[in-house]
Amino acid sequence: MRVCPTTGKGMWLKDSCIPLFMVRMAGISFFNRIFAKILDCMQRLTSLLMLAFVLWTLSVSLVTAQTPDSLGRIRYKYDFIVPDNGNFISAIHAANNRPDKSKRYRIFIKSSMYRIKGEGNPIKITENGKELTIPSPMTVLTAPNTSICGEGMKNTQIESMPMHEGISCTSTLFLKGADSTYIQDLELWSNYRDDMNAFASRAVALNEKNCRGNIFKNLSLMSNQDTYYTNDGGTTYLEGCTIKGTVDFICGGGTIYFNRCDIELRERGGKGDVICAPATEANRTYGYVFNSCRIYGDKQQEGKYMLGRPWKNAPRAVFLGTLMELLPDSLGWTEMHGTLPRLFSEYESLDKEFQLAPTRGRRMQFKDANNVTTNMRYNANLTTAEADKYDINDVFPGWHPERKSAQVNPPVVHIKGRGSIYWDDVPEACLYAVCKNRDVVAFTTQPFYNVPKGTAEGACYSVRCANFYGGLGERSNEVTYPNR
Image (cartoon, rainbow, N blue to C red):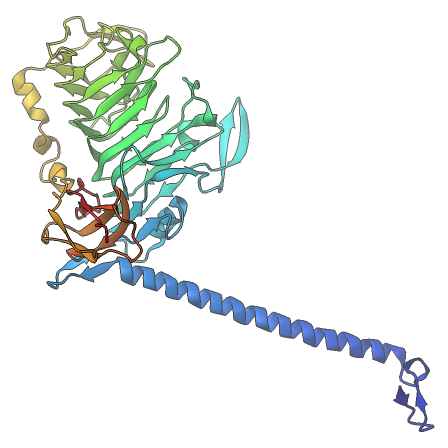
């Protein structure tokens, strides 16, 4: 009910002398004000959420970066823990986007199987003569000085499942100019279409390009063809690693040193595998160096597989003191694309009985690009003096990667009643990982850990020490949480 300004009588809105469009405009204005208030509240909420995220990021950085211990020494905690702080791809993004890349960034991955989809950005590929645009299944690390450490090679697995084959579009992890990358205690698996019978499909588990000074310790790489695409233009040291595949599953350029690594030959439908396809740059003295490695795997590969074939450039590969639990084809090496190897040699290869393997029949003739057979001038079997030149210090003068990747021995752990566990400080340790029933549950820079209230009786605690890069050493003795 309103009052007419002319008659002074009450009247309903429909009888009012106020034009209808003004009433409608008043309603619209009212709703606009409501909508504006809602927008303002949403903007304030967004600002608060952004502020909370920034504060959380700072808190993670402050808690996990540099922490003085009880003696005032600077020790390091992990900058990113998967899955506590996010997933694997988020960890790599955090490493790529950190402001100061001169300092090491340490990622720790708790034991589990992680299936990742990759970054998903559109990439172009050619398949069956057609150009396609697909979401990238790859995860790319571009930042230097990054560590990626898991709990163990057998219980921490990063798996991708690419749907299109090829070197350029399948890498589970792609290290692109990521100098001084350190990876330890995990497995990278490129599971092409989730098809274990995709013997001839190229699917890269680890791809390196233009990286210098990378170290891989206790890293497992699994696929079929092209499992490990090596460091064009760079240098890499591997120790205690396992590489699994069928054809050319170690391929590419760079100087790559495999120290005491396992090479697993996977089943290939009755055909013989080929371990490596080096494409060593012409200006390099060293290519692939396999030192004290072991070759084993599918029993059908006995007498069938090849040690390698020359891909491109000036391929170099030497096998030193290799334990061949399965012997290769007597020729040892095969041909590829008319490329001539610069050096394909062995030194004291051993059979499964630890006796010298027969190597006199190794291939010494290769066809060039014009299909002309050429006799190689190198020795298929190195002399002791020649083999001595492949010492780590000669291949990597002044670097000493085997020292850098050394593990820190654990302390002796004690337990104090039902309150805490403690141990003598280990000066070489970067930090301590506290394990409960063999799983990592906490990290500390102090030589003690307060057991949480409510812990079940009989729980077993142990400690592992991390080296500078964040790689965990062996577990200590176990102590048992006592009964009341």
